[in-house]
Image (cartoon, rainbow, N blue to C red):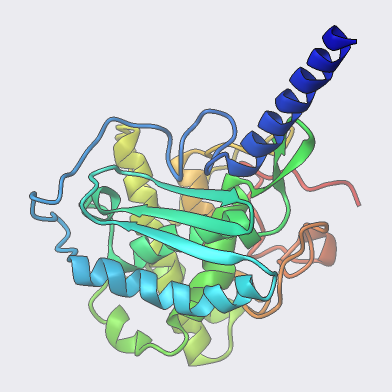
Length: 298
């Protein structure tokens, strides 16, 4: 009897540990790290940011995203906690769920990287939020699908939903005037949107994605330049839940910015097509790229 009770106790403990682990695992569940793969790059706070990013900009960007999404997450009965680790030189970002607390961890090291603009940093915050509320497809876990939207979907959510809300009240024309926007971005944004304001947000979202794509390129030590007019033409046989290649991720950010579905039309945790530009609904622009996404059979 005593041995039987010990076995039951051991099994209960093991199950509890598995459940806790499944709930609390950070941004990637396959040992690949956060928004980027684990890396040894460390940019301490006593090093002047090569991109000019300041602590005030770091905090203001997080404040703005938090103001938008904390109430949305509260409506789900959860609490959004964004950790602000400006002094930490880690070049990464993470998302975790611990009970009713949905956490995002942001680091000064990533914010100080030379490839990152303020909009690129906002895209990182949006990506991490996307793990919590970005919808299908979800990452795989021991129990099937996990709570976390996968890497590609979190990228897509960042520019198709989160950044649009982040940018909607800004003077986007003035902000874009400081950038050189590739003609392919201007032309495609004009093609997909009729209003000037939507076109400008589309352009700004695409350029934010380029900033982040260049971070991924730098961390992988790739020589090939990322461009909007050289999309990744590969086609996966099954959805890739890990980090897509940098060009593929840029394509995802660009396509997210081009999606004509409104930012306030929510995505679904069950149906990949809801709130998105899906091929099954007749969209051929603004869709998730096949370099990471395998559309389910309709």
